Length: 396
Image (cartoon, rainbow, N blue to C red; front, side):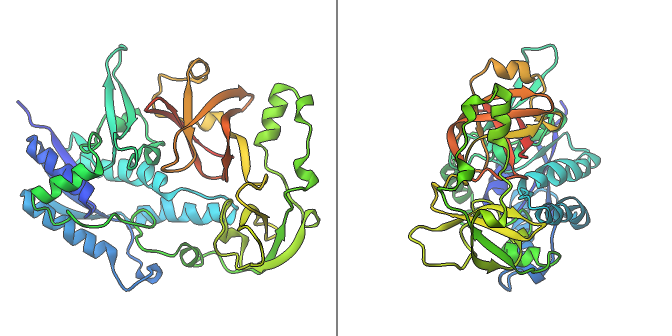
């Protein structure tokens, strides 16, 4: 009987180390690969060189497990597909999610192609999520489910994957909690057992995002304008609108103008700020914190409101382009969604929120039961049925 060959993405962390251990224990023919995707020390916060340390830890784990190991340099692809895209999105005033893009474009595309060229049947990673085969249809469907550890579930970061990718993926730790993963690592003397979880951008490491963005996006002095929570901009009678007019109105972004509020300070570039941000404004004298409620990279203005309940921060409806929806499970469509109890999240670790959906012309409108704070263009909304992630799209 043929033994399935698996390429495990060893990141040098405890999660991928335990994933490799479990696969080895099950008898898979295993190869460990470390992805070198970024090596510009000019943008790290400290003098540490995170990829070298991580690569060394990954190699030591491979030696411990007695599996082949090598490093693959994907920095060119990472720059072209992730970094350049990030700069472009921030310059437009959007807020991209590099971790989601990294999984779609690098780990489960470029890296997967390399794995298959090495004869792999599957690619494995240390993500906290699960792939479940559904054999009820004529064709097998691969469902992406949340990991059982609610605090560590990483399904949101995989919301742009598709069926052709999922059928070749194994997530060995999706049925485990982080505590169990640490315990397995300790009991088997893996060098990464007590290693802290990585922070910062996917593969870039300890990086100050403003410093990182300033490599290409130059500082430009602009105005900070405060919008009152009592502004007439928030006093609209939407009950007179038709159903889809109402959804369009609620999902649209207010185009703030300078004379809508008062000038309270200056900033160094609208493209360095995102909706919901409170740090970096350096403006005091308010009872409650100031939050960014809008940015305009063309006029180089940012608009702020006082307090986390400011109406400029809160929305119940967002929209995504229907033609650009990624159907993680392609047996679904809008008509099926309409008949289901659905949930969604707009950021990692957010508790799943009750939603309903409506399609009108070119857009899918996602209406939340409760107000959501800082719905941000460029980010992703992930749609779930129970624990299964079925679709996602970029928020407009």
